[in-house]
Length: 474
Ligand SMILES: Nc1nc2c(ncn2[C@@H]2O[C@H](COP(=O)(O)OP(=O)(O)OP(=O)(O)O)[C@@H](O)[C@H]2O)c(=O)[nH]1
Ligand SMILES: [Mg+2]
Picture 1 (cartoon, rainbow, N blue to C red):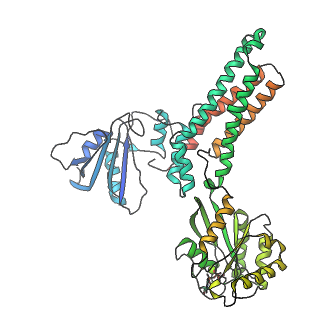
Picture 2 (cartoon, rainbow, N blue to C red; picture 1 turned 60 degrees about the vertical axis):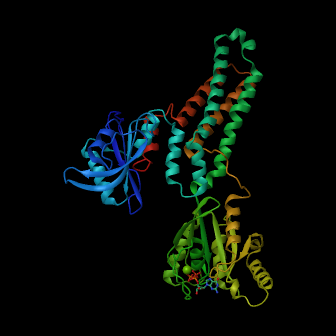
């Protein structure tokens, strides 16, 4: 994206394309209102646009002399707008043809198509939001699960920026004190209260940075999501479980062993985390050539999964193919496993006896299996599912129930790590009684880094990278 010419008016479709209830075309820039006046015919006989007030009417195509759609239009006068420029939004029906005709009309009358993220970029350049808030806008627009949306909402409202600003101010204070000490070396001892500086570095800079880095770790899975693989010998009910967990009829289920060959994915939310479930081909010791290809796919994907659900059919004894599954799991030794005993609706004798016998047999193949959590379900009759979901949640999130109030994203975290390192280095230098130039150098550098987070010292390259990730129309 080249440099933004503030005099240009930009337009874009701001809602996803595809059939839907409402679609929005948005414009920002000085010509927004004049353009609206050319294509909008209000339903009331007279109309004076009032800022921030919705108005009912029609979009008309002067060329074709026809009505394009019945709409609600709103004009928002600068600076109380998303971009701090004049903004117009036209709410129409969401059909692709309607949205495109309205966008074309906006462009015909003087707007140009917006580039991805350009509205938010203008909001940033016009000082309405900082870079941390802009990045959170992108995350919020994309968040599929509750966790990421909560963290991003905290950042959009500026709470993360406040924490960073507070660290920045403390760093600036330390730097000022050190600079005085550099300028008046002979009065060093009186001017620079060394103990106070150490305390500020420790308590107001290092500690909050560590807390933010810790919050990043605790929310990592909310950002990246998790992949959970359902594995087991043929016909144990893997596809049935995928369908039950995703509440959809996604995978084919039959009583013929070897039904699933490819990997089938379904996305669900567990504990606020976006989880990709992977239904796989049944593993057996002597697979046919197509099954062998399916098993190869499992091997390829397994290392990128966070958790295995190992399905066991309780209505029949363990077989050689269960051992083949175990061998496959064993090759990813660090990977956590939950043993899922399926088809409990088919048990005729005492449930507890059957399970303890099966666990005993499993332990003979692998003593480690006794440490794995297990649960009893019927994928077909949908019983025991909430317990299984709870086990998955615990496994992915640990005991943690609450999300941190704010957390940095990966880019911000990497910069914070550098700042932390510099602050610790400065503290060591102060404690070692080195001359104040040395810690001052570190602190100045840390300040520059923090500016990259909020955008004050971000280069064009960094901005380009961030805004190009945005959706069109945002
Ligand atoms: N009674 C009972 N039958 C089940 C249960 N879960 C699955 N089944 C049946 O078991 C058979 C196999 O189910 P699938 O879900 O296709 O099993 P799979 O593990 O995906 O099988 P492959 O794809 O061949 O490896 C079907 O007839 C299902 O209806 C259950 O909890 N109880
Ligand atoms: Mg299957």
